[in-house]
Image 1 (cartoon, one colour):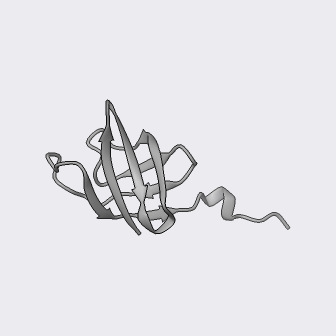
Image 2 (cartoon, one colour):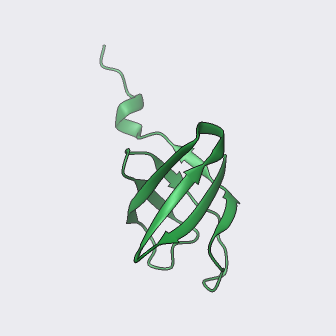
Length: 76
């Protein structure tokens, strides 16, 4: 899905146009942001592409929404 990452003050946020959703990024896997997971305030976990550390924000990227493995498991 297309996601726009931007800086809002000292924080980062992600905007998903298809869902008309903007949420703060509350957790990042990699200090440099790119090539790892970010977690949005609503609980969504997105895998961001591997981009250069000096990529200018705002930027629109193709991100993958990852569903928590535990949530996918069903108990019999």
